[in-house]
Image (cartoon, rainbow, N blue to C red; front, side, top):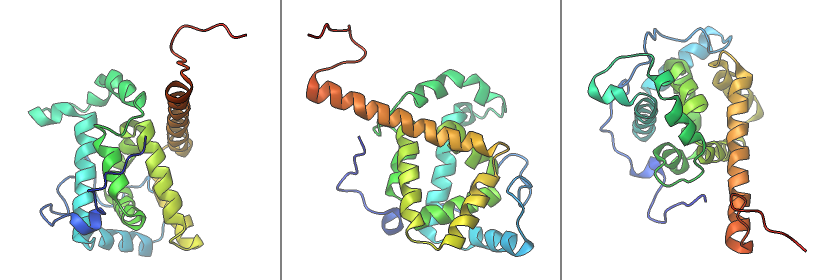
Length: 220
């Protein structure tokens, strides 16, 4: 279910510098979000500078991810609409996406899959400090089950590459953007559970001929 195309390379090797750093802004965002946790001025300054000093590939991936989230939750944006209630209007679309466990036709999951864990570390810190509502929308609404599985695997890989103190600071900033941190954790966990269930059902269907959605068969 997690298919990595052999022709794909790490985004840090293939992307270009065609996207500007500030291609998108969260509505009403002004500097550091007050919902990003209690951090010192040094932390805030470092994060602000980091957005401006992202590697070109990370900067492009950041803007691509922001664009994908906006397009997924606000399709009316493409026609010039600025209706802020579009997230509620797209509840049914979001539900269909939550039920999807395939990486095919899932640009968000595909993008995360191609990113190096340390690139994700930089991108999410930049999002938390500059686009907090977009990061919140990504986790709570834009991630499908396969996206949740891929993202948490990337987090596990990232944890192997950074120190314990950096891990603690990263997750404090990351989860600090959510008004309800448990909602973010639940969204990722529920996505992983849906992915695991679908994987289990696929094994039953493809290798044992058991379809849980079909009529129940009598067993001897």
